[in-house]
Image: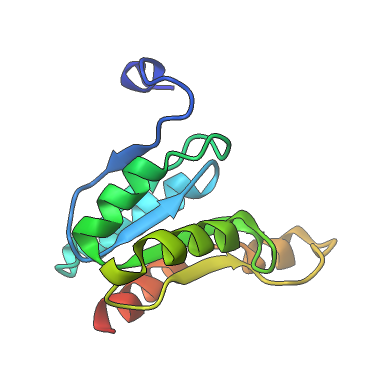
Length: 143
C-alpha cells in the first residue's frame, strides 16, 4: 500500500483521476482495471473520476455523492454477481438520495449472474476488465 493510502482512516473512500464525464465506483480487485480504463478513456477525451470505496461498511456516501453531484453519471464496477450485489445497493442509495442530480441511468459492470466456472479461462472471461469498463464508460458518456 502506498504511504499516502496508509494515512487515510478506514471508512474513507479515495477519489482518483478527476474529471466530469462520469463517476466510476469500485473497490478491491476492480480498482486496477478501473484505473486502466480511466487512462484509456482519458486518451479518448473522456475524463472520469474513479472512487475507490476502500470499505463497504461504513460506506463513504459523502465522497460518492460529491462526485455524482459533479459528474451527473455513475458507473459501478464490482467482481461479484449483478443481482443482489453491493453494486445494486450503491445504485439504490444514489437513486434514492441523488436522483435529481443524474443525467443518465446508473450503469453497472459486474460478474454475470451465474456460478463461477471450474475453468480459470472461463472465469476470466466473466470477470469485469478494463475493456468492459471502457465500453460501459463510452455508453454512459454518450447517453
